Image (cartoon, rainbow, N blue to C red; front, side, top):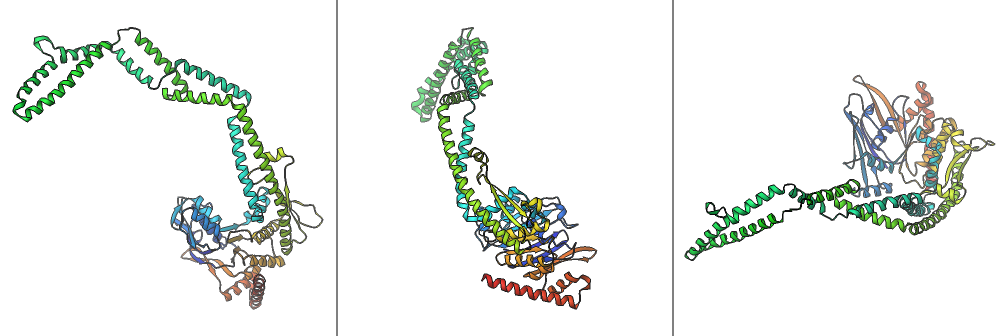
Length: 577
């Protein structure tokens, strides 16, 4: 239930702080006063589209904040828990709009996305404006309305269908993804065979490419390398005759000198040990230099063979991957796919049998859902017909038609997680006329009344605690205005209901009457919203009925309307107690 709504700098509203109770809330005001601004502010906080044009002139930012009690909104409380919000008896939704068009959304002070704000709002408030009434004219929405009416009588069977259809759809997708036509499979096998042979002819080894690159680098600079290896070996091991003895020989001589004095001091002994370790290391280097020098290839054809090998590997990398590792990975995958294709016929038959079996289960469960829908359609059209009779459309015939494709193939092609049925609402507005789609026979006033009838019928299964009707009484007057008012009042016994209206009968039936009025202040136009006490209500009812000519007689009539409204409400409350 909506408990508090705070609005600042939205359209003509500078500031408003409104508190609400249960029951029927009716918003009235003169044309142009801004009766729908309350709805606009509520839609803003519930995640509706908005831009900077909604801001009050001169304001850089504005917004709305709404506090909801959750005792009658279990689905909303569950959703908030799923989103990680602490469990509580209330929730605050807020949205701040800036002059650059951006908005900041919050739930309980925590920033959220606009989608999250909208998701929460849809579980708390159901708003029906004049455009929303038109949803009745869209047949694609009718099945959802019927399913909502049926509630738990349909939900288990529908959930089972959804689960089976999910399995069927997954198996069908795997079949389509894995198995193509025989011609496509043959072409794929040919491509794979070529790639496998292409790689096998070269047979690259892991790490081979890097080894070849290093060897090529050595061979390309073999003469320079050999000269330097020989020079280093000569300097370290052979020396340059008497003019320059070898480094190893000099180190060996120094080591002998240190070893002769080692007995005189531990320090000398340590130096001798350390130098001995270095001598052995130097000796190893000399031997490796000799081996490297001797291993340099004298084969003039080795470099050419190496270049050819690298070219073969590079040719593979252009086709199958950036390096040898990728080529070998492609090779393994190609072999596995080839094996799968060679065994595909047996696998395809197995998967096709699985798809066929699941398809039969889908059709069986969809038929069970369809049978339930057909029974529900009869109940819904009866219930709507009864409501329409009380709303001045007793001569109308309302029909809920459930149709299904003919034949299993057509049904399987049409089925989805909700079944294969098409649901359409039709009506004959007057006795003796043929039933036709709502869009072709219903006037604006009739659509509004059908929507009211539908919401009344759905009130026992609908879990949304707050309903908002923006001028649902469009096209309604006289006796029917009283009937619509009483119907909304009865609906408000089970839901919190808001209604923007211009009818005195509607305002008289309200638990709370809100007046929207414009006034001038310091050269600016402002809109104010206030709840009227009983004397002010009667005065406003008199003004709504007689306008500027409202006098004692109009006031007496307004008081009589209020007295009758309270009597009707008490009677309705007693009937539901």
